[in-house]
Image (cartoon, rainbow, N blue to C red; front, side):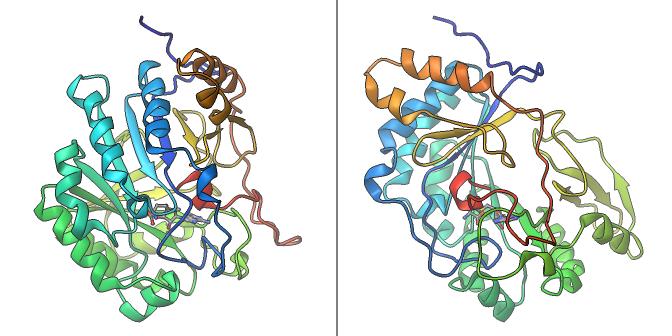
Length: 334
Ligand code: SAM
């Protein structure tokens, strides 16, 4: 049976699903998590089979792009089983892309298996190329391991995009080096503004760096030309004349990109969030577990899409210094 596509109250069709497959991570990036995080009990997590059923229900409803994220998706046990099973939708032509956002720590191990499952592109988060700084930012991460992971991914034939969170006083003076490195290896680089999500150990307002400022600064040294490329994501891209590479800006705070939002997110416990910056959410785990058939699940998905808000309204609140949204990025996935 052909099922109805997912159209929200503002006429936007949902074609992109991001799934956080675990809230756990082998890094503790300072802007993302506190050092001592309490993670969810494993029994609350959707099983790999349930994640597959849920993703497949969305594919039935016209989702063409699936991104697995986390936490760190590649630390979830047996996660390759999920990649392999979701790969069947690519083979059937029901899905255009299956992809992953990763910190790269496990890529050397899994790059080949990802390619076998049908993954063609991966996003890897690297905020700095300075090994000591990298260790400071990630608390538990090692740059050499991540760089080896990226190398393995490229050798296996994966296209790699680098994501870097722009952090005042941390990596703002080293962005030229990041550009040269990424573009020198044929990788796109996307800069992300820090978003006020979840309590962390430090004060985010000190680190917040508006990308409008970064762009103006870069434009004094590089030739930036706006591109119209629609990647199905919120990034706005420029071409850098000197490198020929693409640089993206994800600016949730200085620029609202909600008009064209085509995505929803599901957490590893099956909560469907309609917007990264709003609390609107609906449980899909109950309907998933209530019956073997998918009717209840589809009804819940319809109810949820009918609630999708028009947009988000992040503010880095200097007075209260509280996050705008209480949940961490690792819950909904970046
Ligand atoms: N572990 C994977 C990774 O490192 O890419 C996937 C999950 S991680 C939460 C996804 C992205 O969100 C990373 O690029 C990370 O730097 C970014 N991120 C985490 N917390 C953020 C925040 N508060 N503001 C902006 N970006 C954030």
